[in-house]
Image (cartoon, rainbow, N blue to C red):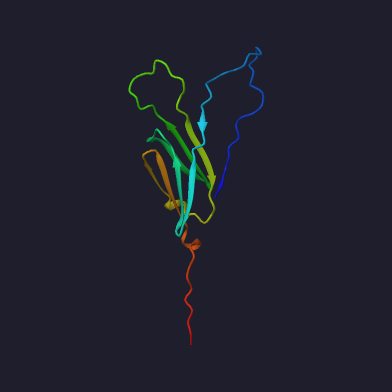
Length: 135
């Protein structure tokens, strides 16, 4: 499994007809969550740290062999902030998935800010023991 990085937009800022910089919205901040990947006999287990993320703000999807983790951390304190020195970032990371992973059977669990993904091998990719007969 290889990580698929997404490049940041580059080039000069867009200008409108007056020569002024055109700004439509603030740029969102994303952080690459730390990930551990373990190989088990039946496939892979991926664990990603996503502190402050709830199930409602988490999206995990697979499209064309690309596993995407997209999450937004939410403020847990009730009320509107009066003063804030930092804002909780969103999380974004992508991985290329090999064909041997059965994408239909991927399972995800979020517990205490840790996302655990079980990526099982397809039946044809699992090692098989061949019985040897002796005459």
